[in-house]
Image 1 (cartoon, rainbow, N blue to C red):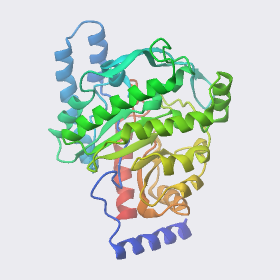
Image 2 (cartoon, rainbow, N blue to C red):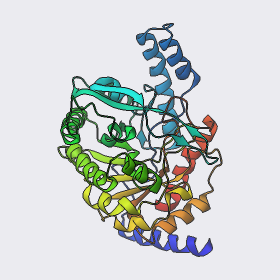
Image 3 (cartoon, rainbow, N blue to C red):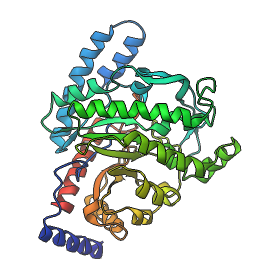
Image 4 (spheres, helix red, strand yellow):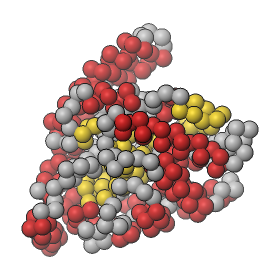
Length: 387
């Protein structure tokens, strides 16, 4: 650890001499994915809303109060990117499916699993008709955060491939879209319209949360897809083009990030396997500014795939776990950052949890105090590494 620390300190000194360490635009050196643990007022509020015990306006007031609190939580931790914790959503893709015409919910054809092999079913987006953006999707979320913080509001959206993969080729009604490409064309138009609207409102930081790309790293998933008549390599090509079609019209003022997730439901996961299968194409062909990469367990492989990242891309290392209450030590985090710098410049790196703390309303098996400590630890280590 001493040698690792000395090496990292040498890199840090070089950066300071070149005045390169500070970041004034997102992603920031200390960042986070977006979702945060819902307080009881939110979880109970969803139950009461669905039971007809409170109105939508009453629930919105509850959400507003809870979001103001969670904004303060992030600011107190020292974070510069601020979200609403996704407190207005049942899951990270809920609002998108609810507000985009043509989307509905059906059973996914994959399952989550844990380290003991226990499986957990889940629901997924399904394309039941022509998709259209008929109204703002997350504009209200942005406006509320912006009006309650002086820091940078961050908006998250589910990735476009998340609307396609989880039902193994059965997720698109063929009477609406005879081919996937026809669906992708309409879906990308929805994203372009929403991103344009957000940018016009002043949003400068948008993140697309993606699970399908990392699923293509898993040999078992690839086998399942092949058995379902889907070509994993062609899917990578198709999803690369789909991302670019969604992001192509964004103004220079907007930082576009992609969060690479391995599934996060009550501490369960969907896939494993290193990033080598996707990294070269992803880094060099997808027109995003930053990639949040899950690296909190051995399931994600080593840092070698980071060698493919061009100099103008930022990689946010997700080496703090949002699924475990154990607090990572500063020295261990610095050691892992140093390991990554064998393949990518320190200037291109930042630090975050591997995922959100609550991709769904149920949240992960951690406490609010765990969450606070981990966010503060990220800020602490980022200041130690980058100054």
